[in-house]
Image (cartoon, rainbow, N blue to C red; front, top):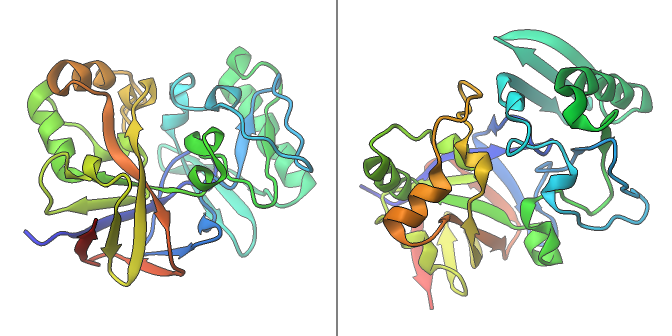
Length: 260
């Protein structure tokens, strides 16, 4: 099997559903456009959009603590700023989240939807040059990193646990196939090329309880960090990479080399 890109995703709002795309627009300075651009901060969280500081994901609504988020499907249209929320395929909310009024509509909806776990009315936050990636607290480079998952590693995990594991549990931007299992864990500190773009491996991606939530059912039906440790001696699946050149990544683009 050729080593190639089989799926591409972005997550405009941290913790909400994936958007499958045929092309990702990537830049060296900003990483993936519109990925983790917004977040729903807990009502108790202090976040200054004029002076943003990276915060641990526990300060926001997220699947690890708020699995009911997986029952919602969301779509964001950058041109209009419109966020659409669907449940069971039916639209239940549409708002311009680039406007004050639209953000208020979304905040009120999620306060009601999440309940007491939201710790008050959530705040839909955004800040120029800031991304709400899980790795943002590590460094500015990690904040704009994109995440890669090797589907062969997912299949190895499936075999170990004896159950189907939906790759969307791992919320990656780039899904590759045709590699050996766990090959991606060797990329930290190395350069790789996918299609016309060059990337540098940064860090292996450690997995938390968020991956225990089935993105189709919103149920916690597996303990994957424990399974990874028991069967493979680590809790990592996937790798963060830094974009080294501006350009587009497309479905079908080939992984052509690895440079020491």
